[in-house]
Length: 463
Length: 128
Image 1 (cartoon, rainbow over the protein chains, first blue to last red):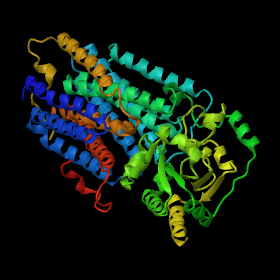
Image 2: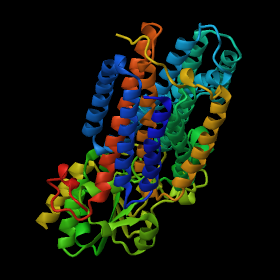
Image 3: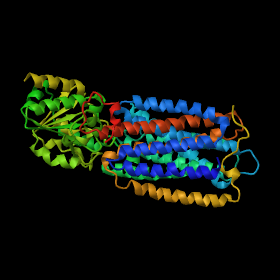
């Protein structure tokens, strides 16, 4: 297949990726959009397969079977709760592939006389560096979300300086490589340095901000892929990579906006560190925590007029969405008005709660967005917080010293009574205190969310 | 075995088009694609942030095409081949995993008033 014919056929995947992005940003066509993208990808792969000629067919087939098989099994098996870390992992391997392509390309062309063009050199250094950052950064994000390493920000004095110096060194070495020093080891060092930078760059970022970080690294991988397209003089890589790089950057900013934080603040704020000021305010509050039994809570719920469930990450961890639905149905039979308050960033990903509750077939009209439900808390008898923490923290409204000050929250503290289902008194994912738990209107029901809900179901039935 | 002597990639069969002409052309489509990428998702609802992130993640799996080109072109030695092979493995994990995860997420969004929770998995294929 000639290069021209291949480039002509590559217009099919290019068009389908653009359509995929367009459709993905509209709830009605999102799934169709993803399918269009997948078909375009298949066309791109088949065209390339034919193009590269017969000698490597088997190697490519074996490689794709291994990688694709792993991807398919992992993506099928993963629980809905673990989606965020899965995304991080798939993003990381994409970045890793871009870095490997740079390595192989440089190795192939280097020692031959007739040095490659400067733009190819620049592309190799860039895609190696960015790909490596994306690879290792994504793996750290994966490890944090999988709780292999602690989600709290890890910081030390001079951290930003060290990171900056490391990045500057990598860029400097990349420039050296591009200015005609024909040494493959330079690229190894650039890639290794990039990988180290990726680790150091993500470590100080708190677990609650991981979605934004993954989105940013996603854009990075897109960029690395576009640059790899320059290396290989391949249009479809350039277009697809640039589309992802640009839309991913915008998406990252939109996600930051949904949390009312700037990207700079997310990346460098070491969010979730307890500032002394906030800790002092929390301490002077001096309230006590009241814990209740399932029987007490069951009575509160059964005799309420209006109950609002506020799901959070704890619901996802405990896989309690079906149980919550069952409890809600039971309450409705008793004439209680039930709705669900969905904070846009509850859970670990925007839209996380919608996905889980949809899985449990919760009727759509009962799902209320933040702006819709907030005015209703005033006339709510019981707000049941199922494993949510930061998104109901009144400090975001009241305490200027709090790291989440300014984030829009669900005003559950305005309900007549609040029941908080929680595993223990440990602070939430962001690692900050929540005065809601010390509010006299609040009772705590400690234990795994699923067990607690099941007990509530049994007790409500007994009433 | 690694393939020797197969026709190489674009730049070796460029014909009359000079390298710089090609570079300018590539930069043009890069810039256009960047603007298009911003434009095409500028009004996405919060609800779809995660699936969109996952969808773009699948699209950058196109890197597998680059990996295939590397693995499929003439090799200098085993190192070249091994790195290309690894790139194909990683790239295809990105593609397949990305699309499957996105589809699973969107499948959830779609079912609103379904018949039963029990037959959740494979029933979503019929016409809307």
